[in-house]
Amino acid sequence: MKTELEDQIVGILPEHFPNFRGAPSQTCLAYGFSCGDGWAPILLDLVTSIAAYEIGKGVVEPTCVFDQVKEKFGILTIYARTEDPYVRGLIDAARSLSARTCENCGSTKGIVRTQGWISTLCRDCLSEGAEFTEVDHVTQALASVERCREVHGSRRWGSVLWLDDVRDPSNFGHPGAVWVRNVDDALNLLTSQKWDLVSLDHDLGEGHDRDGWVVAKALVEMALDKKITFGTALQCHSANPPGRSNIEGYFKDVRDILLGNR
Ligand SMILES: [Zn+2]
Image 1 (cartoon, helix red, strand yellow):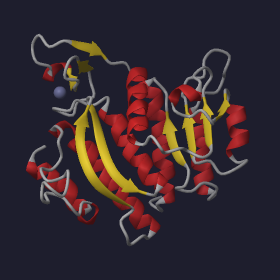
Image 2: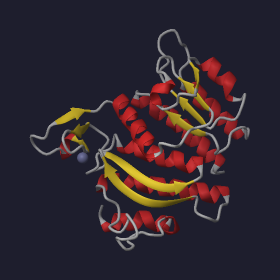
Image 3: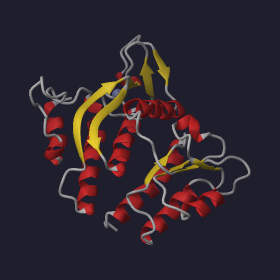
Image 4: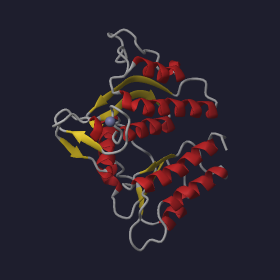
């Protein structure tokens, strides 16, 4: 990554990168971030979100320390030490985003994965004649879950509420999740206990008059009523891009409310 982009990212939270450009014998960040410029906006959003979260929470000590940032198997791979589940969720989200963002130019249109040396690129950035596979969103989501397992093999979510009409949470790294298949059950359980992770699908299939966004909207109400905190990570595992951005829009509202921005 270009030096000026790295400086912009690290400059937002310098104390979270204490070893940045340190001695090669001491740190994996000696040569900066080992990935393309296309992922700079993802990293910029990540550090900005962490900064906003820490300000909102009033914490003085950094909630995480970054040890390494690199591309691995076509995915943005971030090694960071943190005990904070919300920050961990932000880092996971950045990883997921990279699986559908061109590492070279940052485009999210026409994304493919090259074969051989695996890279995530858009069709415009693909070298001529390069072999590639089309990347659909479900594959990308699964790939990021695999990466997540690889990097955080020991991490286990405590309580997980999983809304999906067909997809089994155990195939997505959540064998212990409470699996609900419709909006009513999700709404009933939402307030029944504290959840570490709420993961929503958007399209609940035929015969359902209400989709996952209804639950996301209810989370906004819960944030306004102070019935949800940063301790609950929110995730959308929908394979439908407009559906996902709809739900992620509500998640953003929840974060803004919790941060006191609205
Ligand atoms: Zn590109």
